[in-house]
Image 1: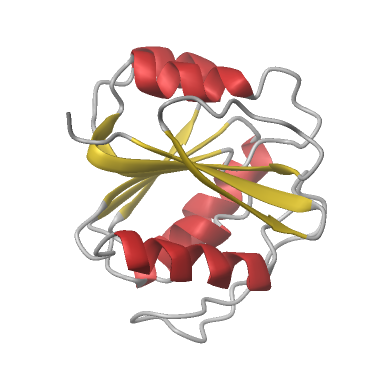
Image 2: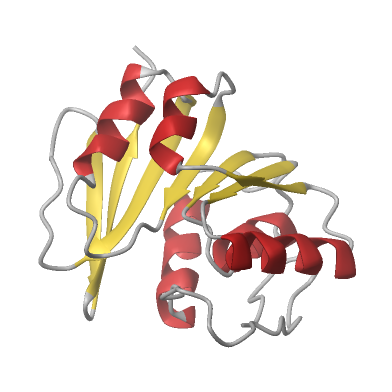
Length: 180
């Protein structure tokens, strides 16, 4: 896994075999960040990375100047990898929480500028992420929620929906907490 841009550009992070993950492709990751750069300033962001897995997106956000990146994952091996990598490369702006994402979203009180969710493509109740984020006011004003999912999965296109991009079998659906 390679960091594409920012202060850690070019850093290769070893991902141990056997993690139950499907990392975001480098092409898709670069496209997502290009889209975000046209919508917001990437420095000093508060970021929540749900279903963090390898931490590919979290480390990219941290390299690009996010002030805080909170990674949430339930898998012990993923959490161990995230913590070891964070410490090894001195990513002081990353914190890792081992927790069920849905329970976490019901109880967290922080506001985020970006929430990125990369759940397993087979997750049956993926739209619940959208509901929990907006019902619990987890996005700051003009904050963006991005959900990565299989291109055949249809997510709600409600009043918060702003965009959807498809890259092969992966799709990214964007929602925004517009200022009223």
